[in-house]
Image (tube, rainbow, N blue to C red; front, side, top):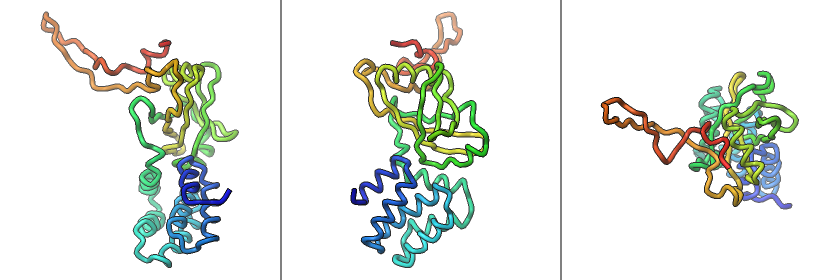
Length: 232
């Protein structure tokens, strides 16, 4: 298949950064002056942790276009060695991956995490797999176990997955002791057409009883995750 910019972008949005590097290299064989391909490759190298290759790639952009704002900004962030700023910048650039939709997406902190050396290999935007076992949903990348979803969310998703729903997930952030993933509903089965995959807590409203005592009244449009796990 011939490498195109659309294919390269789609590959990046899918979190397949190694393949994104290969596709953009192929594009550059036909047109070494393609600064968009170079910038995409620089981003892929950055997410893969290959900062030296990322720097060299962005410098090539500046040789072609000295005022290129993307290359200038990313090169500055890499040189500053600010992991937090670099991560924020990456999330902005792959924003389409993390586009939130009510009821269809959720940002989740994993529990029962793998060892720190495994977690430190994770990069923002990498795709991960979900697998249901023993009433839990485990998160992995290839053969590497990463962590698990909290029980309340996991039980709810197991019901939907068994019923035909499909999901994809990406690493949103990772450190030696924390991993946050972004899950998106890809397909909702007819059985669950009126049921959102994810429920979001909202601020509860206070209403006064006739006797003057305050009663907590939830917004009727929302409910807790835990209260819906047995829903059919």
